[in-house]
Length: 124
Image 1 (cartoon, rainbow, N blue to C red):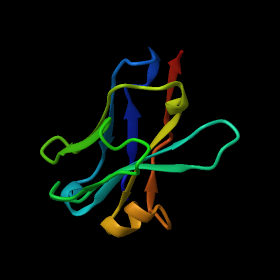
Image 2: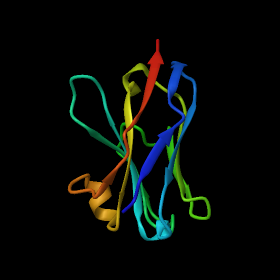
Image 3: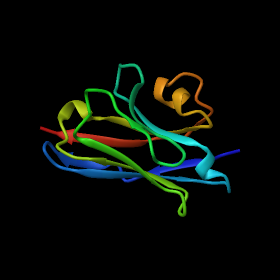
């Protein structure tokens, strides 16, 4: 069982930056691919970023590529999402996710573990 707790959300002006963190429980953190997803009001959940267990592979959709960076510290059981050049359309609840399969996280289907989310609001 893996428990995920997100933090770092808040209110930021357009063009600003935020760093989200996701702390995971368990002793096998490095065996899990991790990801970030987001859901804006009235919209479906959207894939934001994925990282493999070793950190050697990452993936992003075009909507955030070049602005967002996912990273992980396996010694601290934590995954991060650095968000730069934020736009009002980035406003959403951001969820951390974990699965043994990197491709499952990348595709966003059947992911095993989810956090409860943290709200990011970008004002114009």
